[in-house]
Amino acid sequence: MKYVTHFRAAITAAVGFAVILVLWQVIGSAKLLGPTFPPLSSVIASLTVPYRRHLYIRAGLATLSTAAWGYGIGQAGGLAAALFGHLLPFSRAGLDRLASVIHAIPMIALGPLFMAVLSPVWAGTAIAAIGVFFVSYIAGCTAIESAAPTHRDLFQIFGASPLRRLWLLDVPSALPALVTGLRQAVPVAFLGTILGEWFGSAHGLGLLILSAMENFQIALLWSTVILCCGLSLIIFVLLGYVERIVGRHYR
Amino acid sequence: MKRFLARWWGPCLLLLVWQVGVQASGVNQIVMPHPMAVLMDMASNPLVYGRAAAGTLLVAVPGLTAGLAMGGMLALLCQFSAVMEYLLTPLAMMLSSIPVVAIIPVLSRLFGYHMTTLIIIVAIICFLPAFVYMHAGLRSVPAGSLDVFSVFGAGARARLLLLRLPASVPSCMTALRIAAPTAILASLTAEYLMQTGGLGALFRITTAEFRSERAFGCSLVAMVLSVCCFFLALHAERAVTRRWR
Image (cartoon, rainbow over all chains, first blue to last red; front, side, top):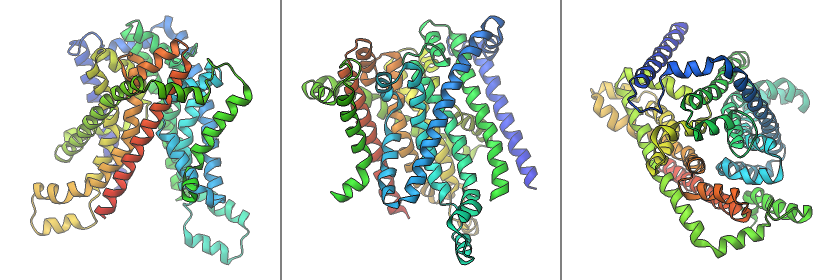
């Protein structure tokens, strides 16, 4: 029964997706939205044209590496902060407030700060890291408290040491929420990277998007944005699978 | 005071680090202005900052309102029409997994460099959380209440007006909280890219002209604006949720 519902949901999503793609092609080729809305086929053509392959690969790798650094630093910082707040409860209210202030600060306003303090390459990483930090902090706080109180009592009764409890109970029960945080931070890392690249990076997909926009290269603009979104989407979906596997094992 | 420190030690620490860091490192004023220089510039040109901030708010607030209204309406449509649900659910799923702000250049080319384009961009970006949360909110009716409604022979309209809409109010407020800082971020980014006025454009111009104390001032005003919007929305959410439960 459960599989039937899953199957139906997947079919529904696929049909909806296909309809959107067909609509895109029809509107684009009829030029209903003007020359700046290209049909799907010309975007695909621009993506697959051989002489641009090198350009896409180089820009994509630059963006990926910036995003990966920001992602790693942000995750480490967010989880460390969550652990800190868990171990020292008096700092928790202040940490929560700090995290929400950081979250409310528009990422783009941080640009000049990081451009001044760091090099242009690292500005994107820093902006991405700040964005990821918030997601990871929230996920970490949820994760650390997700062990059932009754299980904790059981460990207490049998005289388990805190370290043993951490390893056998707290860490395994924290895993599902942690992986959710890992997944949700992916688009944030890409967003921060792109914003950083708009500020004056010498390479990356963000720069390609900006120059295509300013030079009216509509097909290149669309294909680069799609490439960027596609990368984020693929990593997001892969982590979704990891999340499902972890959830099945540890819940 | 103690309560204030317990909640706000983080931002205070950041300001302190900035002040001490600039003084200790002794970098050039153009690279990294002194906090005092930034504050002086803000105090002596309140009109410049005020006009830019008003421009940004004039984009963010209508955009946010339109986005929330659009998200709410589409979530309602999904309640009535299975076709809409088929079309919108994968779209919403996809939008939540991509960096949405990266599509601003596409939208700005699509709609042209106008004030209305800015509002459309903000609305599209705020639409997503609105849709997702309201869609969930309309379904989050108390357990068994649907049975009660069908036992008493309530029609679809009564079910919507008396059960689903009231049940979705807390989620609407959550959507507002999530979307408010996003609206500011989106309008700043769009203004920055399109240079059509507001804080984002001022910020880009002053950065290009190396007037860094004004660029930092813009950035500071933007942060304060965004944080204020976030906390306003947070308090509104708490007030409504408290009364609703």
